[in-house]
Length: 260
Image 1 (cartoon, rainbow, N blue to C red):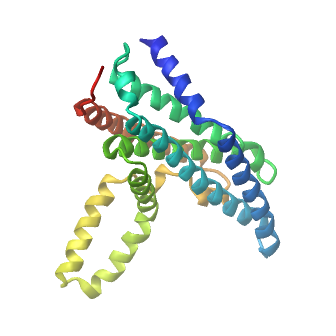
Image 2 (cartoon, rainbow, N blue to C red):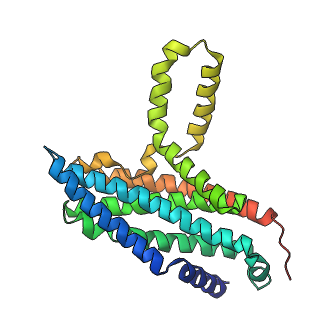
Image 3 (tube, rainbow, N blue to C red):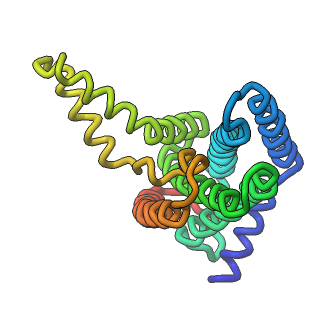
């Protein structure tokens, strides 16, 4: 079972990593570096910290989008090309396929985030650079799990990418939306539409991971607090990861494929 899973993992990973991906990755980090130097010239105070925060956000969102598109494209191709008919005809279980995809996602996330450490160490100290590298890696893992859930359930590349990225952005914007609802409650508390929207968002916000599940820009301006933030983020990723994998397996096993 282990050898078969590793063989599928290597096959899927080699199909994911290619010259285009590496060129895109180089373009992302080059653009982030040049953009941060421009921001440092514009900033009046805390120029390097502000430039690092801008660079961090650009890298973060670019890598998340790159990961979501790459993983979704790979699984969507297996659907479109009827690869599952051949994969499941071999001595491979659906659990092994999902496990191989998780391994691919973890290794691919690691490859995407490794350049962050030396790049950040040009402008920040070692502990902060290490924190941001690990935090972005965990953030990519969480986004990758949501991408797996979306593409295995929806089966189509455009829909799954849009759904996953919108879900990710909604989770990031949830604190701001909460503030808007609280500040507006005094003016619209008797409006049924507002009450319904507030209730619906409270349900969605309960399901979504909170802001502590992501790399926090505030810590770029702080002296310490990296370890508690990482432990909180790690626990959130583990809890959501186990739940998402359970749902993915449940949905994947109910699907029917024409095995030959």
